Image 1: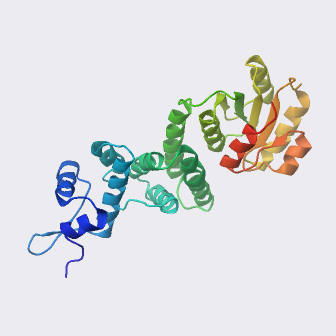
Image 2: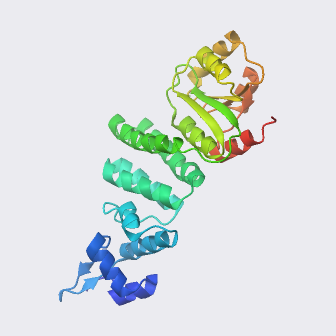
Length: 285
């Protein structure tokens, strides 16, 4: 017995007319029906999910061609929630499938707002990928595939300035710290929130970061430390620099804690991306 539903049932389930469904299938190849012995098309739950996703994107203002391109043909089942999108991205990492990664990233940033996409999908996926790599599931090449795809997407977003300028912020990793994707995501959210961003990135000598911040009259210097062994280097570097008046130093990253920040004499930013943006917005002027 062939599983699936016919096009009339698919139309009823999704509230998309049957003739529209046929056009989408023929022109954009977004559905993959199975055939009965008599040659009739039958559609599965994956097809229902894809139609619902396309329908909702059109309601959001996308043209069908744009929505179909975002959906992509390599993602067999369209994720419907943030959690299922996380799982799909992680599965693409395990399969080392760059086409699926690109399609899923397109969907993620099209469906979710920037803040939700980064905080509830991308950041957790990166954490899972890092844990998998540390436990031997996936090679260095696999991990680089994911991080390179995400980095390229975030860097494009970082170039999109929106909102009124709240102030100037310099963002840099601690000396010898090379884990920067979290900092890059924070920079993107801060720019979207109205900050003028100067992003210095990985392994930045602190004295150089401070001098640069002073030169551009920055209000904030955001420092990120991902590995605990970098904290002594940061401690030594902070002891050797003069902090310009009016420059607020804040600390975040996987290895940062409120206690570490207190010892260093700087403000703790926290681990949650959205809470960090809110906290920076509320700093006294």
